[in-house]
Structure formats: C-alpha cells, structure tokens
Image (cartoon, rainbow, N blue to C red; front, side, top):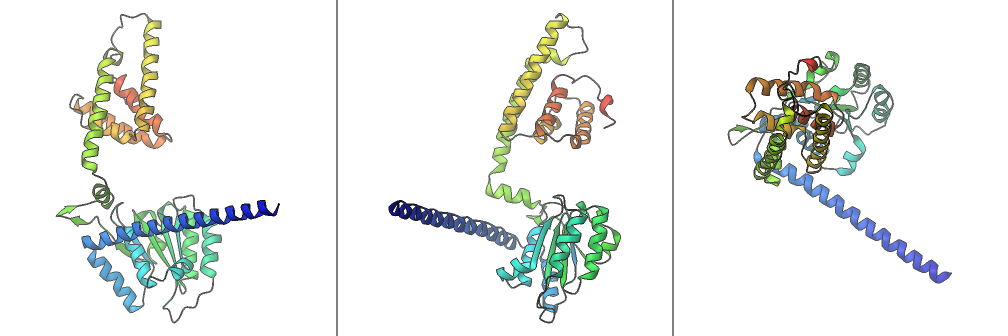
Length: 335
C-alpha cells in the first residue's frame, strides 16, 4: 500500500508540474503576442495627437472619465490598454486589483450595474492624493439597456472621487445624454498608413497571414464551384417556364437539387466560407443584371439579422441564386 501511495503521489506531483509549466508557457505566449501587437502600433506612429493628450492627463494628474469612440478596427482597445498601463506605471498587481474590464455586449444589464459594478466601486483603495484610483473599462457600453445606462449614470455620480470610467463604443449617440455630459470624448479615426485610410484588423491580418493570395484562391474556388452548380441546374432555375417533366419528377429533381445545395453549404461552411463570401460572389458576378444584383444584395442585407444560423443564411442565398434568379423578391421586402 505504501509503495502504491508513493507512486500515486509522484504521478500527481509530475502532473502538477507539467500543468504549471504548460500554464506558464501559455501565459508567456499570450503576453508576448500582446506586446508584439502594442509594439507594432508604436512603430506605425499612429494617433500621436491622441497619445499626447492622454499623456498630458497623466502628467497633470487630472484624468477624467473618457469615452473612446470610433469605427471598428481603429485601435481603441490598444490605446486604452496602453493608457491604463501608463497610469499604473506597468504595475501588473495594481492593474489586476484596481482595473475592471467588462464587455457589455455579453448580456450585461441593470443587475450587473447595481451589484457587481457598485461592489467594485465601493472597495477601499489608498488614493495617495489622487495618484491611485480604480478604473472601470466598459466595452460596447452602447449595448446596455436604458435602465442599465441610467443606473450607470448614478454610479458615476456616487463614485467619481475614487473611480474612473472609460467607455469604448463605436457610436456614442447610442448612449444617454446625461452620460455623455459627464465624460470627456475622444474620437479615434481609422489611421492613415502609407497615405491610405486603413482598418487595423485588416492590416494586422494581411501582415500575419498573406490574405491577398489566400482571398484570391478562395474566391476563385467559390466561383468555380457555384458557376458549375448554376450551369448544371440551369433548367431548375427557370421555374416560370413550362417544364417538359411530369410534376412528380420535377419535384423530385428539385428536392435533389436542394439536398445537394445543403451538402454544398455544409462543405463551404467547413472550409471557412460564410454568407459574406456568397454576397461578394454576387456583387462581382458580371452575368447577373445590375438591377437584379443590387436587389439581391439589399434584400440579403435586410434579412440577415433575422437568421441565427450561418448555414441557413447561406442556404437561403444559394436558393435564390440557383432556383429563383428570375423571380421578384417583392414578397420578402417587408423584412
């Protein structure tokens, strides 16, 4: 029994050591990735005026509540993270204890504001004459309900002495005016790189992965696949014309086509295609009449919010592309 116990204990110790090593490696890798991202931002020398303004706040020791707003991919999150890092002088324990970051898009409502946010704001902190304060970062705060935003406004009033609130949104006008009046607003535009307005998400993807060649290959593959299917079932697309086949055979043929479309959608989805790729194919397909093409695009943009399943949306687009190419979309224009 003693021997078995020793063996089991040794195994547990080895397993624990391996797990700890793996966790440490993963943490180091994550930190390195973040550091690389931040260093790339600095090398690009973008948003210099905004960075100078934030540094001025730190030097004057007068940091207000700030709303960072701008389009997706303009660098809002990186700017805020660097700003917080400078505020706490890179002190990771202080950042861990004094900074609360929340994505409000993940179902955060009035209960979260009244309980968790208030509890964090009430915790004691040594202010050191205003040098140290707690920070609440609210991502996508425009997704909060009206009641939650009203509760947030009250929190800001109560805890403004010991807590700073940083809000990150794309559209500031979705916030209540009483909240806007209590914040300093900083608009962050998409940066200009090589004399061109650039989305940083796209820029980083193109630098890490050679997306231009990959996109060309993917689009050529999709075009070949869809062109072949549309050509193969060209007779099925012309539903308005009388069919030489008996109704039962025609229905069976349509069912086979739909079944094949479902298999095609599953195949495309597993190869990382989505409805955006299908819309791109439609937009750049010279064989589709311009009027019909933009009728398709406008309709699909309007109805895509009604779908909660990407495969169903892809099947819907394929169905109109293959079966109903000559029929009007007026019957779904109400959506």
